[in-house]
Image (tube, rainbow, N blue to C red; front, side):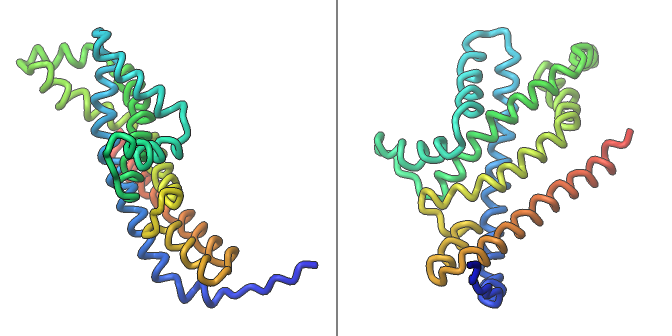
Length: 221
């Protein structure tokens, strides 16, 4: 017989702690996206390069990032590197694992965007006296980010949700870690994890709503 007694007051009293954890979650997600986007730009250029020496390592990164579990990547950062004497804190290991994953997925997003930009754009920049690097930075990259903006925001939501994996390597300051600690002290599993799920949902919806508003304002032409 179903005789569970809900105690929502405990979860509501713990809400400030959970919101502090949500701020850590957002911090990790934002940093992992910044690192991932930076690396992904270089990987996308390398993947589109005619040089095999550039394509091979970039392809290997993408293949590993996209075809292995994100949890495996975080475990390798936290536990695997320890075999080589490199010890990362749970925070850094989680950040590194998510950034690695982001870079792999965003590389393919950016590579598709690059292929959608006519090669004549570069030639037009060169005819104005720009070097290849300057033409790429001023002409190609803005268009690449415009084309890939919404898919990049989808990856940002995925990065937010991936932070929940940090609890498996001892991360206890993000939203899932805080929720797990509260659950261990009170055994009110449903209440605390339901509250955490609502917070994750609201964060994800806010990110996508903000992205759509930005896209509507900036990319209407």
